Image (cartoon, rainbow, N blue to C red; front, top):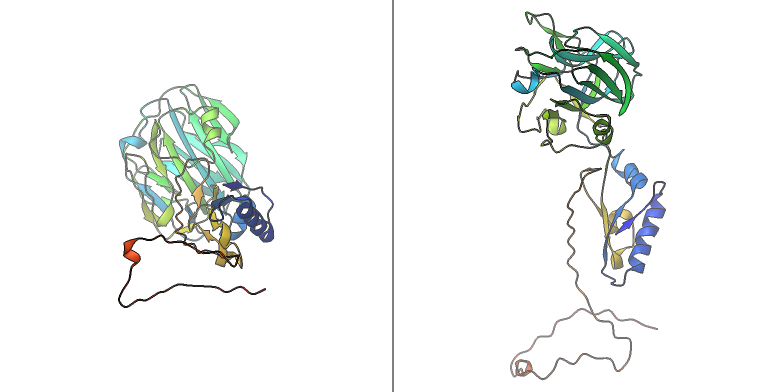
Amino acid sequence: MAAAGTNATDKQVAEAARKAAQDAINPGFFFLIFWGFYERQRVGDLAYDWAIACAAGHKDYIECKNAPAFNPKSDQWTVELWFKADKTSEENILYNKEQLFEAQVHDGFFEYAWQPSWKWRKTFSVAKGRWYHVAVVYDGKTQKVYRNGQFFSQLNQTGKINSNTFPFLIGARYVGTIRNGVSRHFKGAIDEVRVWNQARTPDQILNNVHKRLRGNEEYLQGYWHFEEDLARDFTANENHGLIKGSPATVESTMPGYAVTAGIGSKIQGTFSETYIQSKGTIPFFDWNHLAAVYQASYGLRFSEQDAFVDCGDSASLDLAGDLTLEFFCCGLTT
């Protein structure tokens, strides 16, 4: 297996592939190339096409019905997600569990409002068209904000986050306590929404910023990413979201790679004639099982005048009736 660097051209990849085959003892040697930059050029930016995007002028959002997983009743809680804002003026809600916990992009800043103190708190500035990872953590003593895996700010708080019957919304919020409508729709892309009934540590946040989770992690209450235009909750709670409006599925910020495979003695011609490549993007930072199958057939090359194959003297070769001999051959001239 050959691994390569990060600044490859088409020609360099082809040359590396040929060299890998030439260096192999067996001419039928099968190899895989993981080539970051080159594959990024071929597959796009090698991001998952699994983020959900809400367009300006559309009333797009995701609604998850009220469930125990969205009602902390404790002083241990974390919500994190990736987002990219196409609009930063006015109020653009990222997530909302009305009167319990919510977050938004408001006039160029990321803000959050969480119990016990239900007030908007301004934190870091947000630029349009740029991806950010944000985590808000409450541990019963402080509310902490992490931007792109790094600690940004904190606020002293005590008490519990309670419960209510409101649904959990992604990309919008309910207006008022009588639920007389949904408003303040987010304009941009959202991905990797995670809700934990645990105060995540700095290391836990940083180590999982760019990692796709399995959904069975301890304390994980809800987990959504959006492939195939679905808002599936990948935890055992299965609090799947109902998509409202017509949001688009767009490229996510989560990194991945593609796999390119070739056969040693078959490396010639153009890329498409020589190699095969995985159709989908494979997540980084996780073990994946890959299987590649190649069924080879071989012929014999006779390089000397007296070269031959002796098939032995088996009785099965004593043919007395009709006979057909069939073979492929390629004549070489000097």
